Length: 131
Image 1 (spheres, rainbow, N blue to C red):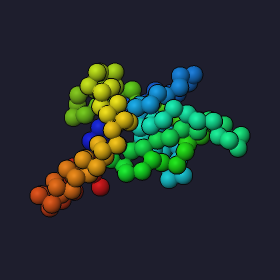
Image 2 (cartoon, rainbow, N blue to C red):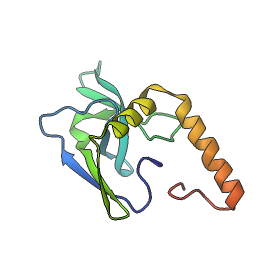
Image 3 (cartoon, rainbow, N blue to C red):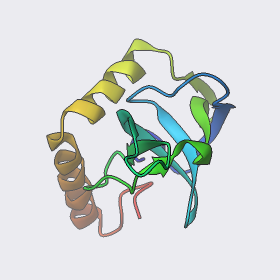
């Protein structure tokens, strides 16, 4: 989720409850590899095989979307984070615009990857927060 979430950030998620996550929100969910916090890309779709509602997620700098995630695997929605002692909420207009850009502009991922590769070559180490 770099650069939106950086190494050392403390993330606070609120339970999903009755509210449905909206595209652009960062959602914490259970995956085979453990807990994952990625951005919801598409509104939920009904599985044709009776498996229920499925969600499509993607990390901000990942090239591809994650496998579809069942509704019962969702845990919470990112509410705020603390970065270097400063509390940051997700309801600011800047965060909302960023979310829309990530969801609707597929070229964004490529641009961030190019920047991080350039930074790695320039400094000889991975960009902070990128592994």
